[in-house]
Length: 131
Image (cartoon, rainbow, N blue to C red; front, top):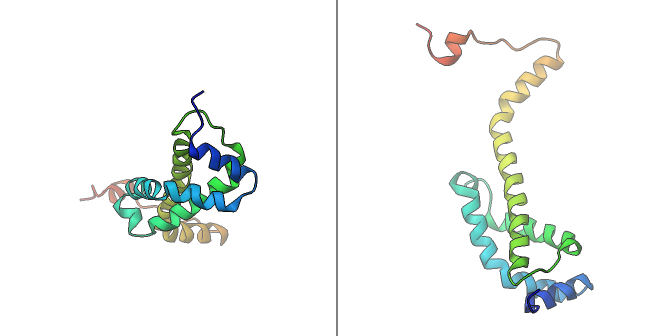
């Protein structure tokens, strides 16, 4: 194993309950994570949510799970945080996709609950191949 870095020292302090170390640790990585989030979200998601919101969610996940982090090499903490970014961005993406289909889905669910089935379009009409 390589020699521990300043990130290693800060992680150990955070694991020991030092909230000041948590602030310093994430201030060190904040900008890099924000850039990563910006590109992960893409234009569609950036129009519906803020990079800072995803960053905050990422930092909360990291703080909650810091006990599961194991230092391996310099850069391993950033890699671990990138996994948290993936989780947060994926969750936001699912919310976005659901919000796009939710109005139609709600109508169908309401119809099924009311005891009727939604009317299906004939295949030719649904595909736009109707004469």
